[in-house]
Amino acid sequence: MAFGYNSFVHLASDYSLGRNLYQTGAHMIWMFVKRFVKVIPGMAAHWHILAFVLWALACAASPCLAQSKPNQAGEIRFVVPVGNVLRGTAPAIPAERSDPLYWQDTVRTESGGRIRIGLLDGSILNVGSQSSLTITQHDPATQQTQLELTYGRIRAKAVHIVQPGGSFKVRTPVAVIGVVGTKFNVATTDDTTEVICLEDMVRVRNVVDRIVGEVTLHVGEFTRVQHGMPPTAPSPASPEQLRESEDATSIPTPPMDLSRVEVSLPPASCGQQPTLLVRAWSKQVQNGKEIEAPVDPELIAGKLLLGSMTVAVEGGRATVANTSGGSAQVGTFAPEGKQVSIPVKIWAAMKIAEGQGWRTSRATFVGNSFSVLGPIGMVRQVAFTFNGQPASVLWMGPCGIGLLSPTIPGGTYQVALSIGGQVVANGKMNLVQASYDLPSPPALLRGQTTKIGIELRGLAGLDQFVQGRPIEVTNLTNNTPEILGGLRSQTPGASTHGETITYRVGAHNVDASGMVRLDATGRGRQRGEFLLGVENKLDEALEQPTNPLTPVQPGP
Image 1 (cartoon, rainbow, N blue to C red):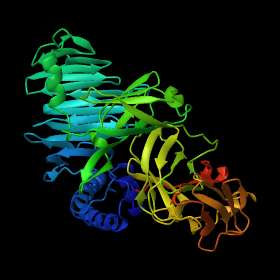
Image 2: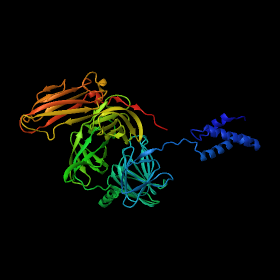
Image 3: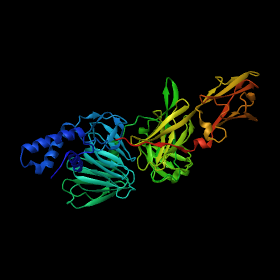
Image 4: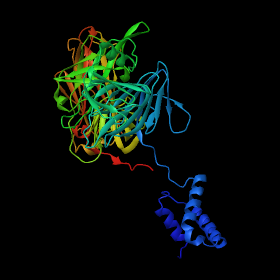
C-alpha cells in the first residue's frame, strides 16, 4: 500500500483523535514512522497502528485536543458559613457566592454548613449540613438533570418538566428519586434513604433495577428505601419530620420585619413558567435613625398571592406555572414562619413589541424598568449590563426578561446580554438621568423669588428615532399654589397651563453632550414649604423594545 504524509494527516483525522492535529507534530511522527518501517521488516503492513500509538504518546506530552469549555450547570447562591467545591482531581476550593458550577462538580458542606445552588433552569437546591452533592448533568434546553447525593440531605425545588423526554433525577447509594416538577427533601446514608414530598408528587425506587417496586409520593407523604429493599409504602410524614426537613436545609435568616414587597409581572403572552423576582425592604435603625433598607433576595421566602394564584417563594424567586397572573392588580406576601400578610405592590406587565431576535429599548431612565425580548428558553441565569454595570432582573420568561436599570450617570452605554454565563448579544442603549436643583428646604417667604432647575442627561443621538416628535416631555406641576405662585418657565418653547409647565425636549435644545436644562421661577404667596410634582416621560418609540441587539457568536 502506498501512503504519504498527507494521507497520514487525513488518517489521524479519521481516527477522531482530536479536532486539531498540529501539522508540526504530524510531520515529526511521519518522519519517525518512515525510518522505523525501513529498519523493521514487516512493519509497513501495520504502519497505521504505529502512527496511532506514536500520535497518542505525543498528545499525552502536549495536548492535541482542543479543550472544550465545560458545561455550566448553575451557580452558588448562598453559603453558610463555609463549604467546598470539588472539580475533577483538583484540590477542593472554598465555595463562594455567585461562583459558577459545572457538570460533575461536587459541593460539600461540613457540620452546620448550608449551600444554596441555583440551576440554570431556575431549579433550587438547598444542601444541608454534612452533605455531598454532585451535579452529574444539567441541560436546561432538554431539561435533563442528574444529581447524585452521596451522603447528607438536600431540599430541591425543581421546575416543571415540559420538554418531551425531560427528566430530573436524584441518585443516592440506595435509591433513585424522579420528579416532573416539585419540591422534595432527600436524606441519605450509605444504606438508607428517606424522601418527603413537599409539593406535587415524587417517584421513588431502589437504585438496583432488579429490585422491583416503585412508589409515588404526594404532598406530605414519606418513604424509606434501604439497601436491597424496595421503598416502603407511602405514609404521612410527621410534623417533626416536616419541620426537621425544613430546618436542616434552610438558610438561617436574621430577625426582620418586612416593610414592603414589590413584584413585576411579565406580559400574559410570555409563555410557560416565567420566574418572578420578589423584592422586599425592612426598616432598620442606623445612627439613631430609622431607615428602609433592601433585603438580600436570598433571605426572602414564603408564599406570594397574586390575584387567585398562590406561588411559593424561595431565595427571592417564584416560578409560576403560566402568565395568567399578568393582569393581577393586588397581591400579598406571607413570609415563611410568620403569621402576617404584607401588601405587595405589583408593577404592571410591559407590552411586548413584535420583532425578531434580541431587542430592547433605545433608552430608559436611570432606575426605571425596561425589557429585553428574545428567546431565553428554559435558562434562568441571565444578566444584562451597561458598560459592565448590571441591571437588576425583575422577571424571566421564554419571551425575554424584565429589568431595572442601574443607578449610574446618564449617557450612552455599551450593553451586553448574557445567558448561562455566555454573552449572546450586545448593542447600545441610552440611560437618561434626571436631577433637580431646588432650594433645601423648599421654603419661601411672602414675596420671595425662587429658582427651579431640572437637568436631563443621556439624550444624545435619540432625536433620529422619534420622527420629529419630542424626545422627552417633562411636566412640572405646582402642588401648593397657596404657597408658591407665578410659576413661569425660563426655557424657550415651554407652555404653561394653570399650575403646570410642559417642557418638550428635542434636538433644538439638547447640547452636544446629550444634556438639557429646564428652568423655572416662582414667587412666594405666603410663608411656608412648597411641593412640586415632576413627571418625566420618554417618547414611546424610545421605550418600546424595538432596538435590535447584535448576536455574539459563542467562543471556542
